[in-house]
Amino acid sequence: MCFFQCHQTSAQRMTREEEFLKKKDLFRRNAFLIIKEMLHLSPRHPSVLVDEVLHSIFFLGEINIPRYSPYDIVSDDDMLNVLKGRYPQPFKFCSSQLPKRSPISCVLDMMVFLIKQKNENEIIRRLRELIRQLKQDEATDLVSSVICVSQPNKTPNSARYYGVSMSTSGRNPGRIMIAASCLSTWETYVAGAVMTYYPKKEKKPYFDGTIKLPVQVRCQAFSLSQETEMPPCRSCGNLFGLETSEKKEWPYGNCAEVESVSNLLKNEREVEEQARPTSDTCTEANRQEAKRSVLKELTASLRMLGFKWDNNFYTPQAV
Image (cartoon, rainbow, N blue to C red; front, side):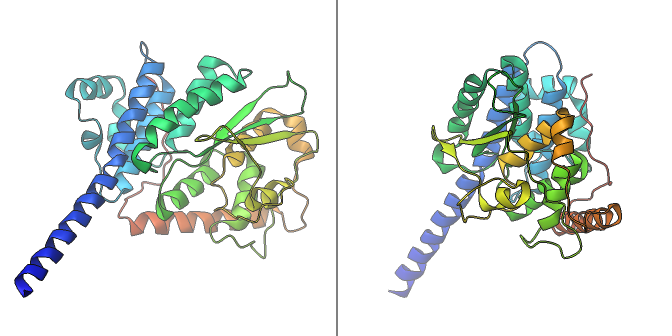
C-alpha cells in the first residue's frame, strides 16, 4: 500500500513539474512569435526597432526563471544566423545592459510607423491580432493587455500618441522594467509621477511629482483581448488626475496610459507646460533623491536575480 501511495505521489509530482515546465516554455514560444512578427514587418533592411526588441526579449530571457539564452529563444538555425549577422549587439549586451522598455512597446512603434498614427482603429486591430496569438494556452509572458491612445485635444485630426501596458510577467521583471523606463526613456514629468509611488504604491513623503492633464486632452485605454474601452485605474487617476471610479490600483508605471502620456508630453510642449507638477515638494533636489531611490531598488532587484549590470542602458542601432 505504501509503495502504491508513494509511487502515485511521485507521479503526481512529475505531472506538476511537467506542467510547470510547459507553462514556463510559453516564454520561449512568445519570444519567438514576437521576433517573427517584427521580421515580417521589417523584411528587407536592418531596423533599429528590431534591434531593440531583440535586446529587450533576450534580457528578459536572462532574468526569467528558468533562464533562456538567445540561442534557446531563436532555435531556428537559419533565423539565428540572419539575426546574428544583422543584429549582433543584442546578443553581445543582453547579459550586461538594460533595455529602456519592454518588447511590445517596440512592436507598437513599428506598427504605428507602418500604419501611420492617424489610423487608430487599424493599429489597435493589428496589435490585437498579435496579442491573441501570444495569449494562447493562457500565456502571460511578454503579453501586453492594454493599449492607450492620447491626443492633445479631442478634435479628430489631432496627433495620436500610443502606449501599451508592460509586457512582462512576474513581480521582479515588472519592477525592473518600470524602473528602467523611469530612468532612461519616459518624459520627465511622467517619470516623476511614477517615481512618486514606486515601488510600494505609497506616495513618498518628500516628493510629489504627480501631474494633472489638461481637460482638453484625450487619454483612452482599450483592452487588447476584448473589443472594449477601459476606464483609468486608481493608479492612473493618482498619477495624471484622470477621472475614474475604479478602485483597482495596479503597480505604478505598469499601465498603458503611462507610455502613451509620456509620448504625448514629449511631442506636445504646450500640453507638457500645462501639466507641470505643482506640489511644493517637487523640487529638483527631491526629484534626484527619488531617482536615487528608484536606482537603488532597481540595482537590488537585478542583484537578487544574479544579473550583472554594467550601469548602461542599451542603445539600439541598425548596422
